[in-house]
Length: 310
Image 1 (cartoon, one colour):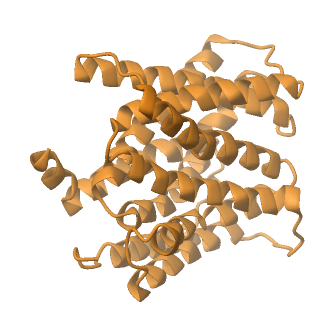
Image 2 (cartoon, helix red, strand yellow):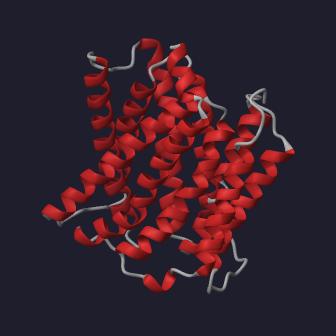
Image 3 (spheres, helix red, strand yellow):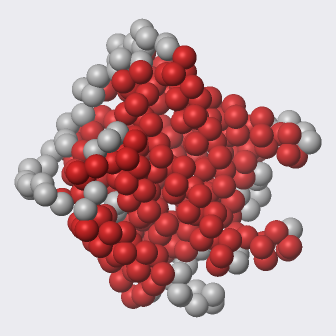
């Protein structure tokens, strides 16, 4: 265990591991849009989108459990004392985060949603520092987060007008989604001290995915088109969640929340760039994107320069 901890706390390992997660999650942005097109899910069909997400996360959980079971050479399942932990983690990580996100997205525009989602890194660090007292909230961390957030802000408002209108079910729900994500990150770190990280990741996805699938169906969501391309895209998105979240969970287990969470600024950046390429929106690529990416990298560097004693 000490050997693994020593390996997982190396700065280069944190950077490579977190960037792999960001690249996978970033690829999900355009792939979700492509998946919607392949399965004829409209941009305003929130119920079908929640159903689609439910299927994705259920599959992701099954994949994570199978991969973890093979690598551990035993079937991973939550023992009696771990069931409540899986339920709580699933509530914050999957159910609340994504229900708030999809409903909120239906009542606001993508630009505002992306900017508010960019706050999740700072919220996670605040929750970890001020509520759970797991680390110190230093000026260095605050400055790094603000610089990274400004990078996300710039890339999203480039060439667009941004009004200040806000509603509870729109921008409010998107913000609650970020709060839910922040709590899930800290809760995962707490629970992983006693439980297998991959087990927690896999089963919380299964439970959350099933709940979201049922919610989508009850809201009237239906997926009537199942093409081979659409099924492949759904499986890819499930694999993205299974691998990225399991790896992210391992990084959180052995490192301060701030050192890992700050890489979350890369998710919308990579998603923006990949969306421009895969969706052939080349006009979105500009010098502003490079400036934004540079700011995000500077923010990550500043946060990760904090002393180990912190």
